[in-house]
Image 1 (cartoon, rainbow, N blue to C red):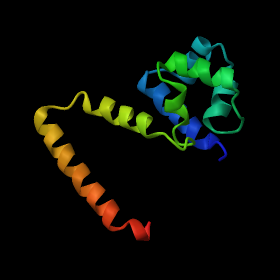
Image 2: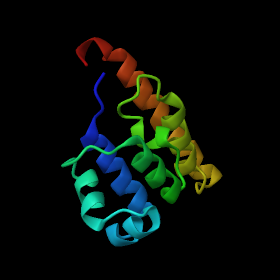
Image 3: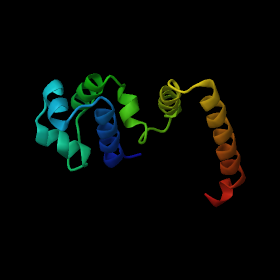
Length: 115
């Protein structure tokens, strides 16, 4: 399986924005050039493992969080992301989200052959 550098770049950008960092700030904190960060986010360059780890540490995420679109066994990363999204929900909101997820999973299972 090849790495999906576009997906990695999109995830880095999303986590960067969640942290409230500009490309300049991420570059400064991860000891990279702004141009290199830009090229990583747009998949115009492939990032090395040390750079991936520096970016992950700077964004307070795991490398798995950044690679999960390319990993065969990524369920923990997705479950962690979902849990993080749900942390701020009220009990009523969690009930609604649970209903939505049940409906979506049921639909996915019912239409699996068509996917």
